[in-house]
Image (cartoon, rainbow, N blue to C red; front, side):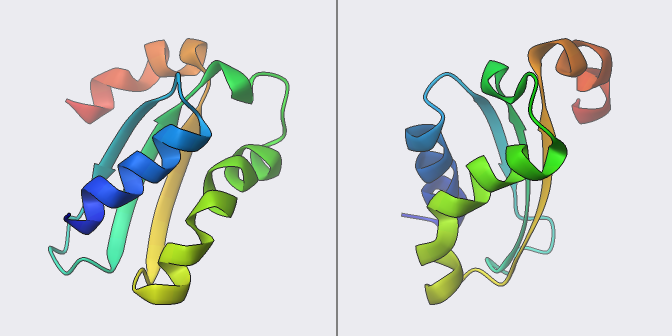
Length: 86
């Protein structure tokens, strides 16, 4: 399985109702970008939101993933910003 799919699947398992976009802009498989939209982020600080996404990815960082640029959004924030993601 390609790393992009692995990362998306891992996040999806941790946040089952999330909308997730994972990109490999450098096409190197180690520097990825992710946008995660979840109602579970409502009322949480940005740090707590990122922890909910990053903690399940620890194994990936230990094995092969070098960097993940992460953007977390609530559904309300997504509605305002989704035009940026084509």
